[in-house]
Amino acid sequence: MKLSKKKLLNSTQLSPSHKAYLLNYLDRMRNVRIYQFLIIISFIALWEITTRLKIVDSFIFSSPSRVIKCFIDMVADGSIFYHIGVTLLETFVSFSLVIIIGILAAVILWWNESAAKVLEPYLVVLNSLPKSALAPVFIVWLGNNMKTIIVAAVSVGTVS
Image (cartoon, rainbow, N blue to C red; front, top):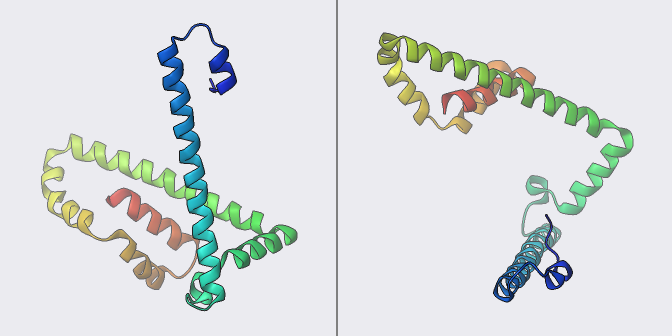
């Protein structure tokens, strides 16, 4: 149920102290939303200004205006939908593999205490690896393609 000040003030089921509390809550939440909005607008404005003044390298960090222009161009030629589809496919395949591998590994380790004892030190070492550092290694080994993205996502999801 969405609270509104008008409904709240006209309500006969609430005590005056509860109405006051809810009105105060609504004011606080409105202020939170205003501050959140101001922070994101300030961040985007600062980002745009710093790239235009060459404080931040726009080649590396781009700029909000270039991002919006690129998005509009990609919508116009339809390529954004292809890229969204590929990203969703990679995400769903990776997620499915992580679920399957994770459940199978858990069941095997739970059923077979010997395997759990033997594999424990290796699993501890794998868990301590920085997963994001593996991505460049996978790119070198597997190339820059969908298979690499899925393998990197699975390694992050199953090893952690």
